[in-house]
Length: 361
Image 1 (cartoon, rainbow, N blue to C red):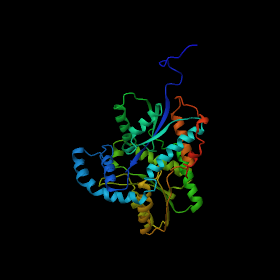
Image 2: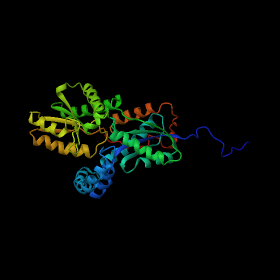
Image 3: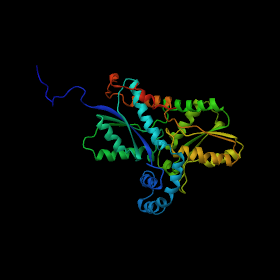
């Protein structure tokens, strides 16, 4: 009987395949101090604010970080949950559900998440995957439409981790899924479910996060991909041109941004006689301060105070079954050709009741 030496390679020891979901990030707490730390990292990113550092840093540190955190902290406090930041809560839930849904399809994969700004970081997410045995990683930023200020900067941060890492795993990335069939079907189903409950009338407003007009002029495809998503979604919903409008929110500073702007559009619709609007944010797959406070609160106030009668915010995809199903299918397409460990149902597996408790529509 021969004895296998520890240095003797065994089949399957090449390591596991893992998934890293990436989202924007959030302050750790809804306090001025925590928001200041978060904004310093976010607004200090040259991908986000494309102004020469010599001009921008005195403004950022001398003005913005002295005044904006207190007001922003109030906005975060207004949407904070007992579990924490909605963005982090939903991203964590999506991560766990994705692992379970992939398990149901016969693929047992470690799935983790990292935030571009704040905690847990992209580096922490990658290290957690390596600790779980991953030697191949699919990195999926949760931004349906590509933008240098979101997708590219997340990959920049991944590059920072790569430069500091001795043993780098194989890595694949997903840069956008603006026209993905599953994503669009999940959005359409979410809106149709709202209409079945509340009726279908008035106008549908699709609000995407805004970007400076200059980014499109420099070749960023973000505006084009937002329009693509909007038109494909409208076609799925069988909407006429006069039944929907696409807008851009979250304008910051004095420069021209992508138009039309969301809040002025809501006011114009109300003043023009539109009695009801249903607002959806297709560029966000998880509810956050930009959707729950800026749209569901500030947008509602703008519409109603301008003469509108009914404002409905349609929540993001969050942990919706159709969305997690679409996410699993998207992941599987990008994993083609990589070995994936089969599910070991004797070790709990995706049918664990604890996983089912994570699901909430």
